[in-house]
Image 1 (cartoon, rainbow, N blue to C red):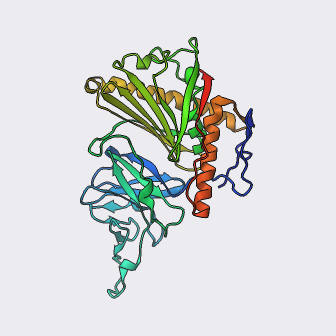
Image 2: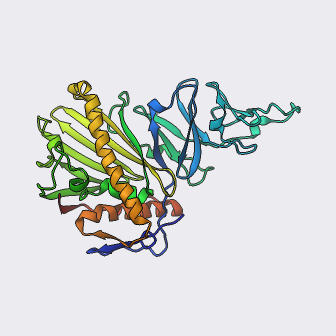
Image 3: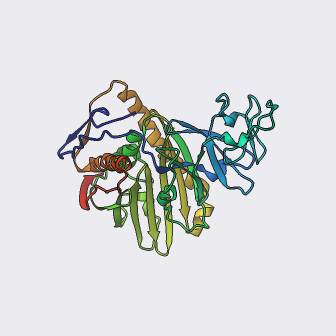
Length: 368
């Protein structure tokens, strides 16, 4: 399905919108890595079926505890392999008992009397799949026969390879990936959606000035001291600074430096289908005291995420009437950058040319 600015009902005000008459913006971006799940959800000897970008996929772990991902259909009659059995080595379809190994190669067809038939010719598509810092990522290709270069775009999760992220929360946003991303990077909603005694109040609005730069497949808010009206940062002592980085297809990285310690907070948006997007939040820190307050801290994080979920349920109701929407001024410029980044990625994949980041370094202002 293709979406352009007109099809999503957006009117851009105050800024001229760059046009590309030869390319319509895809809803789903391919040839990129997507967050699938926190590794704790993928147990040895168990299968997990998920829908990602409208594709049905089954995940599991092999004998070496490495994750794998296969198309979730038996090639015989199409029954989901995730509904069958898994002994830690082979998946067996629940319908006729066909077996497949981790690479998707058929190893057994119980009903077949002809031993001369080469079962290995029957394949289930295997997706590139990696575990990084205790999280599972999957590569969704545009063309399933062309997987070269997949590992060139593995995400950098900002922490050492031997460290793992803690899981905070997972929710399903009742909106497509575009609305979900715009909500993720929108600075103006924070004061009103996330009003809390420990965060900030709508009565203490301040004008913000932030420097932005293009980086990789997105842009970053250059490292700066946290806002003085954000109470959540006030407990962090020792020269606190933060850098926020957004990367296609829908990942927001916040890196907080606290003296010699660091906090890495990552929100990942993964399209389920055209109407739903899964949000996962993961967390890492070298601050030793956090382990003693992890459960209340996780509860606050979940509360923050569910405030977003609540407004998105209201958004879902409002979008039913197909209203015309706006992207207005500097507070919404990051949303426009996102759409431009998507178009440029689509263009690079269609033309097989290097991706060119359209974002330019500049200073943005807004009041929150």
